[in-house]
Image 1 (spheres, rainbow, N blue to C red):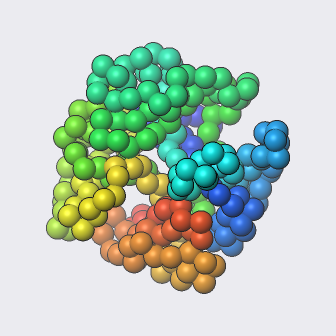
Image 2: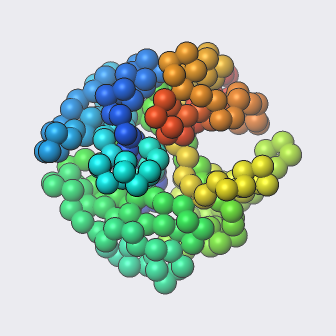
Amino acid sequence: MPEITSYEHGAPCWTDLATSEPERAKVFYSVLFGWTYQDNDMGGGQFYSMAQLNGLDAGAIYGQSAEEIEQGVPPRWSTYINVDDVDATAAKVAPLGGSLMMEPFDVMDVGRMALISDPTGAVVALWQFKAHMGARVVNEPGAMTWNELATGDTDAAEAFYTELLGWHSHVVDMGGFDYTIFHITHEHPAGGMVQLDESQAGVNSHWNVYFAVEDCDATTELAVDSGGRVVVPPTDIPAGRFAILADPQGAVFAVMRTNEELA
C-alpha cells in the first residue's frame, strides 16, 4: 500500500462524512472497508474521526451539528480539492457563476479551506494544506478512488471547473451515455461528470465519492446486510463494475472495482 506524499493543484485530496450518527456510521464503514479510527476531540462532545487503512489516513467521519439535524439536512460525503492558494481560488468563484458558501478560514494548523457551490448547485470544498495534506492512501480497496459530479447542466459545470481549477475535459462513451472526464494533465485525471437524467427528477447536483473495492457485488451485499441500501445495483461499464449505495443514516457513496484491478 504505497503512501501518497503530495497532491497537484486541482486534485481531489480528501473526503469526509458528516452524519447524524457517527458511532453507528463508524461501525458500518469498518465492516465494509476495514477502517480503524483515530478520534480527534473537536470540543462540545464532538469528534473528527480519522478513518485509516493500515495506519494511513483514508478519510474521516464526524457528527452533524444539532442545527443541521433539526433542519433535516441529510448526512453526506464531501469532496475536497487541493489548491495552491485557497483565497485566490475562492475569489474566482462568484465571477464564474458559483457561490461562496464559507469564506476561506483556517482549520487550526492543519490547513485552510473554503466551501463553494458551483453554478449548478453542487457543493465542494477547496483545501490548501498545512499540516494535513489529505488522504495518505487512495486507489486501494477501502480508499477513495474517484470523484464524480452528477449535475443537471454539464455545460455550465464544465465551464466553471475548467476556468476555476485549470482542468481540461473530454467526453467518452460509457456504453450508451456520454461521460465527461476532467484532467489536471493528460495523464492525471481529476474526476468525472455525468448528466442527471429524467429518472433522477428531484435529485440536486452533487459530488459523489467512489471507494475502491475488491468485489463490487460482495461489498454491495455486505452493505445491505449491515443496514445500508442499494441506490444503483452493481453495473458494468467500460471502466469496471460499480454500485451506488446509501449507508444506514442515508449518506450516499459509490464502490467500484476497476478493470485495472481485475487485470
